[in-house]
Image (cartoon, rainbow, N blue to C red):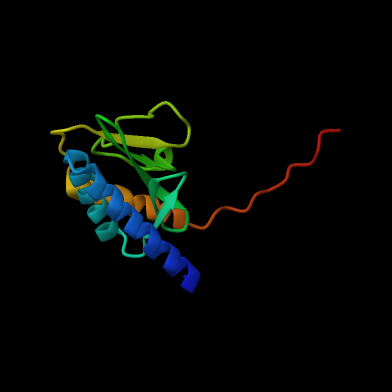
Amino acid sequence: MTDKDDKDSGAASRLIDQRISELGDWRGERLAHMRMLIRAAEPGIIEEWKWRGVPVWSHAGIICTGETYKEVVKLTFAKGASLPDPSGLFNASLTGNTRRAIDIRVGDTIDDEDFKALVRAAAALNSAPRPARTRTPAAR
């Protein structure tokens, strides 16, 4: 991580703190809790602020985003379709080929250890060596 990355991450962390504080309700509390779990699961995680105000957690690529709506806190995993989800945490965006999301509504509970395992799996997937692409000869 460069000094610039560290400075950018610090600014992003402050913006995420501000968002949590501004929410001032169950959504802020839940986003703060999920953020704590993400950071605990993967100590090398980088916090970012993208797309005009979306908290993003990355490790060798995007792990997940944390959006808040009127009735839901949505954690979207960039490569969720490729992750094992034995406890069935993913409950939204289930039909796509890439992303998966967890929609959390007021009163919902999520097992902390299962969620941290999902974050660790996403970080491992991002860090895994990618197989070399092979080119097939053009059809004649």
